[in-house]
Image (cartoon, rainbow, N blue to C red; front, side, top):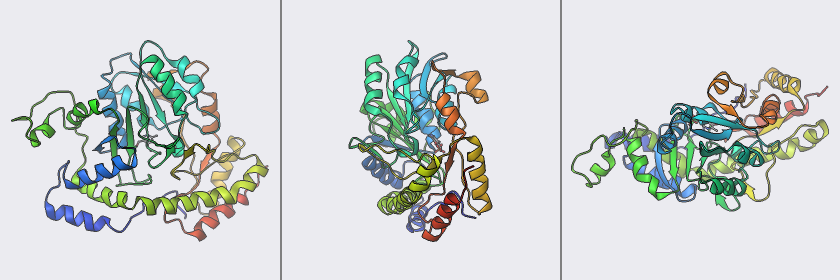
Length: 377
Ligand SMILES: Cc1ncc(COP(=O)(O)O)c(C=O)c1O
């Protein structure tokens, strides 16, 4: 079976894990956390980075930093992972679901302004597959209404928009280092703060609501409970693993890009002949080769292609089940004017192909053969 993903190892993970173990500095915010955080900041445009246990937890931290109250609203795409919405629902806020663009599958910037109300506290964007949202338009809307933009940058590590790194465009950005992501430590994440004023409180929220970080830096004589918080910092062991991955970023990206470019080149003619859409990348942005997907003509072809790939020993996967029509989305959310017809349609047609650095040329050729031998009725 060719799986959808195999976690990649750079070869340095064991060495760094052994170093971390022999140092006995295993709690959060140890030497590897500092090293990994600096590398992340360098790759996402310079914002201050706090490592977290997941992107889900980094999103929860943004919700705490926003001081959300019952009835506040947070605008986001319906076409995203549940964590984008859960983070704000946990604080009593209402997610307001906006439809996606049919080309990039990102939040449709033309629909964002109509979703804003006096209760809107933030706009959350997701750069699907690491291809940037229409950020200039979205940032202009946010400025006009005085609300912050948060980038759920789970897919976008290493991508750019008009020469700027994804993760540097919103006031905060969240990263995922889950095993399926380009850089991974099994489960992990980061919160990137592009407004320096947010750092002090974010550090406290991440350390159970205490000023423990300030205590260790000698700024206060004891640490106390000073804010509402939780435990969002990972062990330095995970940071050691992550450091090895981050140091191997360029090599990882080269391998992923080869796989992505091969799919894009080899499937172009078949896709055009059969009315199948492939990723759209505008010239003003670079993607980090996070996903490769096909948008089939209809739902029946989505189901049939996934089955056809399965028969050939290949795992093809759909993406996302729309949040606006999911049980909790209906109960706890609101859908922006016009609904989310594009999201409903695309989620019934999209198929993701295996993409990971160690996908061999021969296995990828098998995937391409399986796709191009699929007959569209
Ligand atoms: C857009 C998006 N946001 C958040 C997450 C959650 O990431 P994590 O597993 O690191 O919590 C995911 C997971 O894939 C995602 O796709």
